[in-house]
Image (cartoon, rainbow, N blue to C red; front, side, top):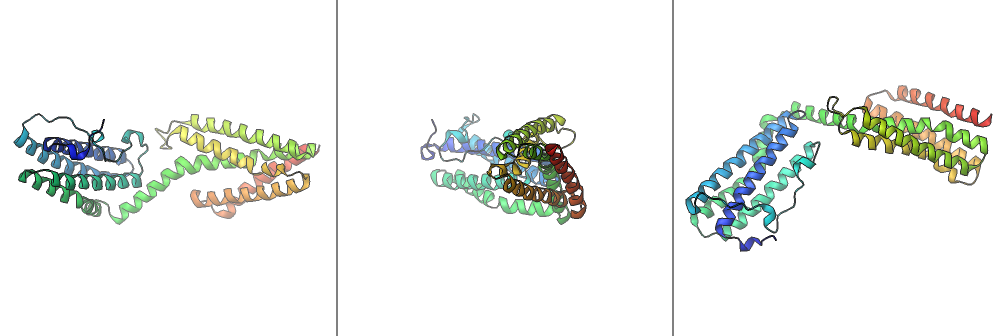
Length: 319
């Protein structure tokens, strides 16, 4: 069971402070390790912050030894009520630049409040002064981080990190999602419209479209997930890419399938054709936005392919 903060002895408060500083130092080191490949300048910031926390831990250890001896009992943050629960760093992969900076702000604010409360609870003058000094250090740690950032992260470096962040987003999310959307929107055109024109029954067309969309989503999802593990290409977790690709493939096919819930064959077909046009334009825009492909060129490539598949479906269904 967790213990209330007010119930802690001065020995326990110092032991907890040592544990907090050690934990924060290791977290910052983990941040630096996780960011050094893609964000080396920001990784340097967290390396400096880890060194700062280690310095705090040494001050606290010296004070503990002076008052209570060399044995420091293990008291962790989860043993005391009131601390915010943190998600283990090893579960937060890949590390995002904004995520770690926000987490660092939360850690510093929480540690500062701890020192402020602890300083009011202890009676030893030397210990109280140390805790107040550490509270002030944590209060100014954000300023320290900003100064470190100004020193190590120039405007060019910050811009470069944004480019890296965008590149990772494109590789890990946009590319598999776009591949799925294109496959789902284009490849399902033929079976949907073939079924529609062969049977003239919206319900049959809807069933074929749903089967084609779900089947294509499962197939594309597995194909993307098994294509590579991301270790060499930097494309991120394979299962995440597979889920994104599979869902977007299914969404692309369902878009022009849902109109066949309408009872009228001609009305449903007209609405489906309008949705197909919107889907192809959306794909063209995404290619322009993230793949730096000129819109007219992207639209021409996508629309020509889509129209050919669409006509093939109608011809086969009308045969």
